Image 1 (tube, rainbow, N blue to C red):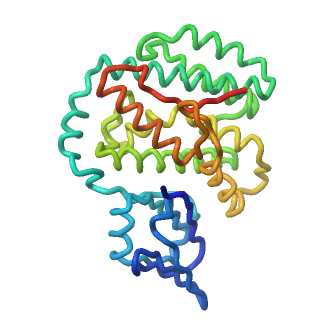
Image 2 (image 1 turned 60 degrees about the vertical axis):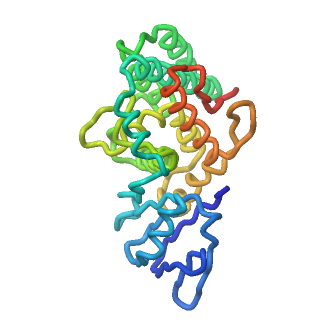
Length: 291
């Protein structure tokens, strides 16, 4: 199983040779076995990469994230075909019933609020009690938007009353970076299973290529949030980004077992799709947030 997260930050030429990614930088040449790579982040616009390597990265289902001149994630590489029966799976995805999608989304929102509540309890923030109240008030498909109300309470509790997700600051930059890393990992799993990311459960934005991934990420956001809370974000540069990337190596509990987050995301994503296909919400395996 792939496990390495590779970040290329400086000028380099990337090529493919005998199942290795060959990285040439100045006087140094490094070879990395492709089967070990789960995520490749290209942080510099001075990196050149061969089509031969890009083709192999796609075949190996390795997620590739490209960054802009400010080293912020700007796009990612997504395969057209995730599995041999993608056409059949996409036809089924188009026909997912509104009823099961509503039930699945309700459970996702419930889990998200519960994870946020447990985070606040760990931080000894009394606002956890209000989130507990919201959890008990959730209706099917979250018609009363308990998720939105909970988000405002939650972020104000952990980052202060004046904090807003629309502000241009290091906290939001770090949150956005972390969420992008999680989203990319979920995109990788959805496409590997043969489904498309554009057709979501709740999210339905015609300009969002990752509607389904935007649904699945919601209960996982707290993992990024807790990481950011612990960091000194006087600066948000290379070292801080590498620290955030390390969350994929975090040990988590899912289905009663310990897994690295990178692998747990695959188990969770597959379980949500199985729950939809089998019309059984008990099939969902959430990552546990424990006190």
